[in-house]
Image (tube, rainbow, N blue to C red):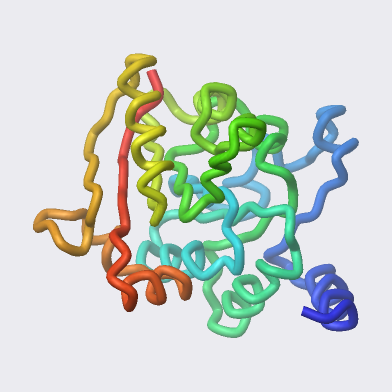
Length: 224
């Protein structure tokens, strides 16, 4: 994407009512007005709150919001030029129950209050295979602690990935740390009984993986 295109998207994001772009300072100094008030102030309802972490273009967040109008969805990514597409689509199609937050996933526990979130989706994250990159792996112990802080006690985390490495790493960590694995499948499109929300919604890249017969894995779990 050219720099002119990026700038245009950044400017357009500033005009979208469904995009929130706090500064790092705003978050870490606890001056973020939506923390603890996402349902009442942003969505203006009391429906369950679901996050998609590393939402990319936002297509999964938008599709979930369309499918489940009785829930609120927030796609989170640091790359605003990417989720511009999802934000614009939601506005054009009049989907009121989805918003986008531009921030780093490392700051997620500064953007949401304790027990504020009902469910988390992590879709096709970078597996960060190199050892030096493990601190950025979105299902490592440190990230799970952040998620536990903002999730309700019975809150759910969903991991959907094409990376068998990420799937195996996460399953091993969950079992090793004593978390509760509710469902795990290393090929959701080949095995019967996969949850409908996992197979009925596909990202652009996911449909490409499937064309090349690449298995899509899924884990649903609770952090203990």
